[in-house]
Amino acid sequence: MKILSVKNNKFDATFEVELDAKTWKDSIAKTKKDLAKNIQIQGFRKGHVPQAEIDKRISDTEVAMRALDKQQNLIIQKILESKEFKDSDCLDSVNKLEVVKLQPTPVINVGFELVPKVENFEAKDIKEIKLPAFKAANVTEAMVKQQIKMMIKPDAMLSAKKDGIVAKGNIAVIDFKGFIDGKAFKGGEGKNYELEIGSKSFIDNFEDQLIGCKKGDKKDVNVTFPKDYGMKDYAGKPAKFEVVINDVKEIEYPEITKDYCKKFGMDCANMAELEKHIKSLFNQETELRYQDMAMRLINDTISKKAKLNYYPKALMNMHKNQILRQYENEANRAGFKTLDQYKKAIGLDAKKFEETLETSAKATLVVALVYEKLIEDYKIKVEEADKKDYLGKLAKYLGDEKKAKDMFEKNKEYAESNILRDKLFKKLVSECKKESK
Image 1 (tube, rainbow, N blue to C red):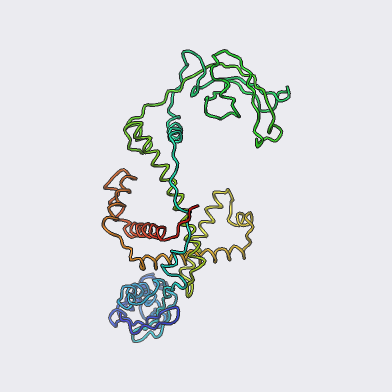
Image 2: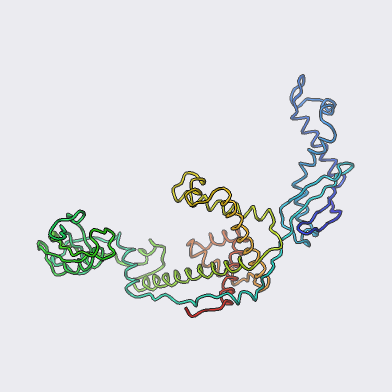
């Protein structure tokens, strides 16, 4: 196959190509052979129809078209691999395929949409985007300890407290009955309820008033329901609870060892290391929230300011399908049987939904192409140090260095695109204006 010419139009490029004589001759012969094997004609067994009979029923033009159809994917692949295609600025999806002539050798036109050009946006425009300055998390010792407590609590053991005196951190097993204006109220009664003292799971200072009580004691606990309490009939009203202490238990938490921490996928040898790790996770969460906020602001600014010289059908359809799948997933999570039911629930008729898809697809396409332009403008590349860092994180996540290397090689293009994206994002955040708030 040879490329005869390349004609560039405003939004696409047409490659005029011709098949070589030998390839075409072989393709015609193979097509006739396949027809002889598969065609069924009354009076002849399948696979034994004489060629003369086949020729009577199928014209040379039809044979040629079938042969060309079989060559179509190969033709497109060779165009994509050609120097002419690499020198052009085309998308790799075909938008036109026309037969110019069939004999003596086929000449066909294959069209590809051009990569759209970003307009009205340059790297310098990033400097005009305003972001709030990053503020590190104020991670207190109490926050860390509470998080660890929540993690290990399912493995804790309860045992009867020897002195039977209620203290903070104990479990008081209580019967209680509540009264408002001297009358028992609905939902204010419980039997053998295991209340952790200091958990603030009961209203006001209910738990604090039980501290110092002993097993077997009776205690009147006086509290006031919060003004914003969920049940309006009780909100802001004083109440008295008659409480009986049935038992007092101590919570015995598991020892923090290296083996125990493996249960949570954490490489910590003791409590001090676990606390340090949990603190780092709080900080990471804060950074991720900031990054997410910054990304949304940057993307929003880009999608509003940048424009494309045109919106290729192939890319628009790809983004529309992705957004459509997101809606389908949202509908499924929300418990709707069909997407139509979900669209109705959120107030989108067919026309509005299509407009939403169109608008969203344009916005995501603009952002994606601006990112490609910025990667080029900033000369961002994947360095060996980047790969090493990515592999290290992947190995830590998978817990196996060999698996990480295999996964990286298998999905190299995807991994490198992630590296480029992360490097670009850090660059963009560093370029934006930072506000004090």
